[in-house]
Length: 557
Image (cartoon, rainbow, N blue to C red):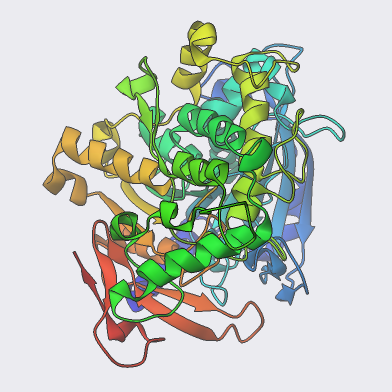
């Protein structure tokens, strides 16, 4: 597949070079061509109600080598990939509402263009400009970044900037800022980037791709659902698509930790080790990865960890057992959310004690935090509480001082349904995306506690139910990474998903034979272990041989 993908890239580059020799941005005229891109982009070029786009700067940037930092929030974040010579265009799209923030964007235009673009998704509540210069989500560490492959790369802040001292959800009090965050900004920036490519190279891109993780994964699926003609291929990793359910689950799961329910780090380790004892070897090899977390639900019983007497470090008290059961249980609503959903699936078991952000990980990063949930939430609380509680206050209650302990969804039903219709990217109707030739690859990390991987799995199954399994397989695939957490740590998590997507979109080659790898984050990015990339509902079972080799496993039911 890699050879075929490279052939496609070379053919596209040759076609662009032959057809665009007079384009302003070319290798023999790069500085002048880049400087000439500063004119505004009219609102008429944007397919939604909008102000015009102002280009604040267009700067030719020299090629730069790979750099690796000592530390970062994730292994991939320590890697700054090599970049070619490119024109860095910064700008902003004016709002319709004068009180709304502008949408900031960055478009990187290589002087040697392959005729394609990749738009990067954001993360969290956004509010930070995505540069489009990093590795794509779940990319192998040694891979050439899209810009160096010749792709135009695109990023945005989604229409607001975080303000020091303010919660990241504050922007949602403005209706246009919320609309931009939900979906409008990504469409608007896409349209502006196409206008800039037309201006720079004398032609529009032949293919447009979107790649995102978490919130960015939601954005990718949002594009397929709302703007099916805008992207040819979409890679969506750990997407937070069941957004309203997720935020309310963050509230519920956090409240279960209040008081005696809070689980300190030593007891997180206790649960993690109990899960591994019950489930790690079920795939044929004890390697610290629970390959079949669905089967693990039947094997692991948290009640066996409950103290028989007084609370002690070697057992869980009754409130802690209840908190774990709450986390594992679905959150049910007594009314319908967007697309008829009434339930958000539970999380776990597996990956409770994984390293994720620095010295903490798994539950400690996402759920339990370094301290019990606070009122108002603090940054040392679990991220799900910090995010979910803030979303309840700013998105649903529209009251920064809303009492989180007294909040009831049914008291805010009109607003809740309004936000659900904006934010929940759960429509199973991808028929328009399929009809115009779009291809979709989804990846769920099964050790994820930032969101439930089963929300994405249930969504994919709803698409299969709507369109039929055979039709769905012709344009969409769902893969899973066992034991891997939200940001890609805990096991083999990376593969050449962009290459697979390009080969599928442009060469008609459906993904096959891909492997997930776990690598050192330092050059030469040594592969430490690998697994076959299994299409849901298959999972990798050990069949003998080197336990670090993908060939020693087979995808099984």
